[in-house]
Structures are given as C-alpha cells and as structure tokens.
Length: 488
Image (cartoon, rainbow, N blue to C red; front, side, top):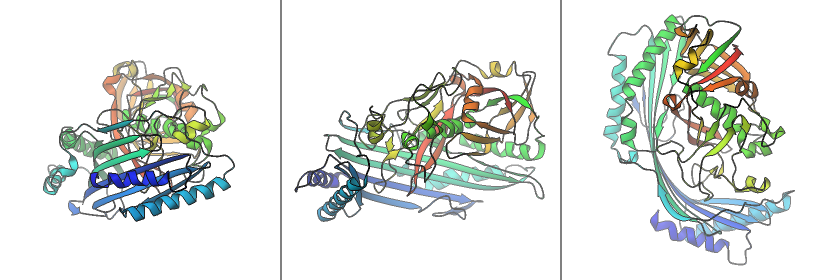
C-alpha cells in the first residue's frame, strides 16, 4: 500500500489538471486480503463448498477507485494496473462518463459540504487474524467436529464450518483535502448445523460469530459450548417441540430475532437511497418514502440505533468511504422517525450533512449507503420482569426463516428455539411459531425493551447493489416484548 500512495495522489492531481474541470474528485486506493477455510461434514475445502457459501480460498486484491463529479454528473472508474498510465486512463474514463451523465440527468448531483480530515486509524486488536497460520485455523475448526462424536444424538446432523479471515487497507483522498489511511482486520466463524430425523422433521441453524477485535477476541467467546448447545437444542426442537398456541398472545423476542428485525424492518427502510427510489429496481424501496422526519413509527419505548464506532464490531469504522467521520445514528428515537442513513449525495438532496453511511467492500465497488451495526437500544426491563405478567405467550429466542416485502413494510419471522410462556413461567418448546406483521404494527406493539444485561450481537453479511456487495455488519439488541399480537 505505501508504495502506491504516490500513484493515488498523482491520480487526484491529474483529475484536477490537464484542462479538466471537476466539481469534486476522490481517489480510493484499497487492498483486500481474504482467506477462507471450510469443512463439510468433517472434510476440509480450500475454496468453494458443495453449497455456494464462499468464493476463492485465498484472495488478494489491490486497486484504485476514482470518482469524479463534473457539471452534476458522476463518473467512476477502477483499475488494478497500478502504474501511472493505467491510472490516468482510469481518470480519463471517469471524466468522460461524468460528462455524459451530466447531460442525461434531470437534476445535477451535488455533494454535501463536510469537514475534511487528515488522519490514520485502525481497529484495536492484539492478534491480526490474517496472520494466524493455516495450521492453527484448521485445528480451530477440527475441534468442533468432536461435538458430533462425543455422544449419541437423537437425530442425524449435517455440519458445515466456515472460517473467514480478512484485512482491508485503504488510503482515501479527495479534492476537499481529506487524506485518510485505515487498517481493519476481520474474522468470522460460521457454524451451519442441519438436524435431520429420518422420515421426519428437519431444522437448520446458521450463526455468525464475527469481530474486528482480533483472533484472540474470537477464541475467547467459548464457541465450543455455544455450538454444542445449538446442536442439542436442534435435536430437542425436532423431537420434542409442540404446536404453538393460537390467537392473540404476547411475544418476547430474543436478541437474535430483535437484531434481524432492527436490520430489516428499520435499517433498510431508513436508507435514504431507498427512500429516494434508487434501489427500487434492485432490492426495493422504503415505506418511509411516504413520510417525513418526525413521523411516529412505534411506541415511545422503541429506540433503534445504528453505530459504526462500536469497538470490536464486525461493521466497525471511524470514517466512511467518502471521508466523513462516523458517529451513532438514532434511526428511531422514542418511537419517532428520527434519522435516515445518508451519504454526501443524498445529504445534499435533503439539505443536511452526511452521517457517514457510505461504504464499499472493495476498490472495484461504488461506495453506497450501507448499515454497520444496527440494534434495539437497551431499555429498563430484566427478562424476569418481562415474563412475569405474561399469561399466555411465546419466547422466540431465535428464528429459522424470515421474509419481508420490497418496501420493508410487511414481514414474517418464524421462530426456531421458541418456548411457551404460561402465567409468567417458561414451559415447553413450541414448533415454528410465526409472527406475520407490518413494521408499523410490530413497532406499535412493543411495550418493553430489555436492559443492557440481555444485549447480544450477531454478525452478518448485508447484501445490496448490482454488482453485489456483501457488507460486514452486526445486528443486535436486548429482549423485546410485543403485546397482543397474532401468531401466523
């Protein structure tokens, strides 16, 4: 990276000289390193699994991304030929694209005015996961295979383990005098367990344990016990779970379910590019397009935040890919539509400032509006206080499937590990209770959010855009209680 910074600076100088006129210019030099190891039923794979979960086993990418704004038109070009001629050709291509775009646009693109920074930053870690030996990574996964031989299980299991270690290094500069260097290593461990009862039921579970706090952080999480517990629970769900109750009941959502809801029912519809309609042909729009800031979404106790700056989080960053300093975004505050996710382009449309939501996953991808770490904020209730006055309800600790419409309004979540609640007590497992409800109905039914003691996080890869960008994120929250909702 250091050897190529002068080429990035040359690209920016060239974009602003040689007779060109740019309203705005930026250059992002980026290196992406990624190693993936997979085990399918105990057999190691360095590369694609029989199911398409991973790509190349060992990936090394480095290149330059140039974006130019010319007369209100945006042009972008990339190259991995890191020599002056190729980079200048990329600048020329971006410039021509921007000029063509400016003639076709009804309204010119503008970039919001933001403070510029000259800084270097990185995530905090002791052991960079990309530097851990292949032998140690293999041994780490092989330990989990023992779970399936240490005792007799009531069902058969298919098991897949994926370990992804990566590092992203960026040197970002723009015509507003920003100059930002960053290094963020990441590690993600994905155990995928499928329980099968021959001739009967089956259940599958996928978890993502992920962090930017280093290899030592990942291995400190007692993952063997967590996976062992998941295997045992899947077996019990298949063999013991009973039919859930019918009619209107109370539901307590565990952190895993609260987390996916915060991401899908709140994070995505609060993306300003969706609100403006840009994502309509790819991933949908937003029901909030019909509403303005200040619209009541849910009860006063509902608070959902989005914060890239959480130390160790999988979606961690301190400055986005447009050089804007990150901070916590309060999407729903006391039940009110409080804030959108904005980049510099959409911030200009709404006559405000960017809140640092521009992210790309590699040098050859456009920075677009993305989530980082989306979660229900902790409230005041302990779990015991939540269940004590529930006469009839469900504790949906985890989910097995979900779906949601293009506007992020109508949604359905199906429980996996879920328990009956009767007269304030947790009872037996129930089989696949379904919550089918609108976003407004869901947030309007919430009357309690658990305290910080129940706050948990789950790693994920959020898909968006074309070409696709699978962005690392965290979802999370405490337990959340809904009153008088109907099971699907």
